[in-house]
Image (cartoon, rainbow over all chains, first blue to last red; front, side, top):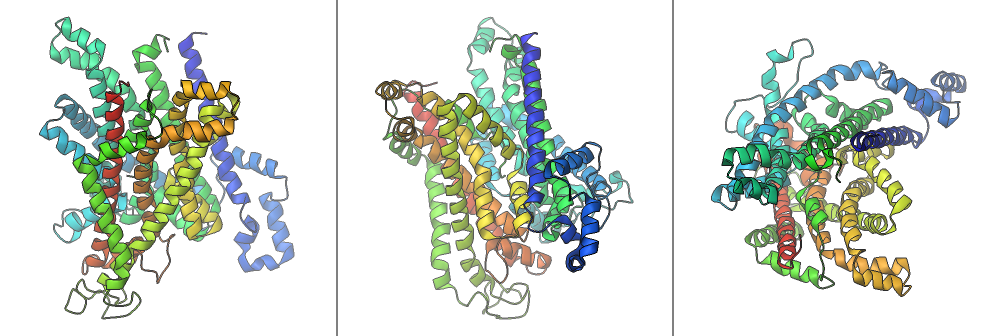
Length: 321
Length: 305
């Protein structure tokens, strides 16, 4: 087998293993619950032994734990995540629209943060130790420190309530209206996420760009008399992108977690807010589903980044590790 | 921010960490070097100021944190300088009381994360082979959950308990710290003094704790600052979501949650905690950055990388 293919297959295998273990953790979480799902659904009526036993049977709770897990995982794979305990509706129905909203939000944040980071990161690296570099450094360091809700609330105070009233402070996206007609509801949540995530990508990109600019192959390219533009675009940037790709993927995956607080803050109907509600109501099938989606996105994003890194880094591509 | 569950600068530092000739007192060099930088001094100043405010606050507060001093969401006045909160309590008083919980809980979570993370990092870095492989897979699973989601998953099972939140924030840090320490350990384990100790038949446990651990102190300092920054955001964030401290506690995170409905009429009970949490995290991150830079600087000087 070619070494490159072997490397990719190994990485894929690890990703699948991690996904499997994640599902075990999420499933085990409900098993640790004092009392069981049947009791949770029935509440006080659980005192009615006959109903309780019937529901246990119906939910498959009398089967061995391993079988319950296999059944649950079978459901997950086929898109059946069980019913919400609070609304008695399939979790998939409750989450599909929310997942779509969240995906749009994350996509907008990504589309904003990647070019911004690319620009500030490479410019800082090229004008290393200049005033511009120092400003970007201190600015990104401070922004990176701030929790999302701090950024979000300051934006609300500045742009939605106290100072200006440019954007809505609450983002109750209406499911009956197409998203492009209510894009203004995405402004503040998306900017919050961008400001929270872009500093990380900027900093890593700057660091990897500097490392590349100091490398021997860039020096070699310059000594060969290549035009600076070609040196930068053909020799420096592709190599600087490999580590940045990793961080970008990780940060985009992090956005899937960052949405929890941001969605709650803006009342945005996405999976993050669904998670907060479900945790407050102890709606376990809902908690399981959202945790599984978020962790799954993380693992897949990470996996994709790793494989892309293998493909774009010249050293790995030629099989010389 | 937050955990950003990403390879942060310090993890990059971690990968490059530790080069020949540095031992024991090296962390003192790192601290001295870091102290020479303006950003570290500013960071320490900010951190010191907020901690002092949180510690002294309850003594200088004009009222009791649960005392009603006016109408709900009253604007600033002579009696209440920053007005009142959603049920008419003094904002200045509640701000002065509300910092202790965030800071102590965040410190506790950071220490748990460091304890578990360093232990795992040393074991995976020194044990290698299947122990390393198995532990790293388990850590990958924890890493797959954003820290806030990990905490929420367990809150949904056990309920909103403070000990649980501190524990889960700490556990969420552990794999991230473990990776940095593992990288440092892998390199230290190749050095002559470790080889010599092995040749003398010193037990592996003793080698880990008395030979390898001291050499990882500098990256640890960076991790401490960084994880403290994230702990503050996570702990305050969980309180903001309503799963941390419960009313009538005076706590910055909870204050934001309780008072945000009145943000248009009376912004102070939201703005003050937000600004203080923000300044605090900037301070701790500046310290972490200063340490990280010092670490890289020292490596360059001693001919590393």
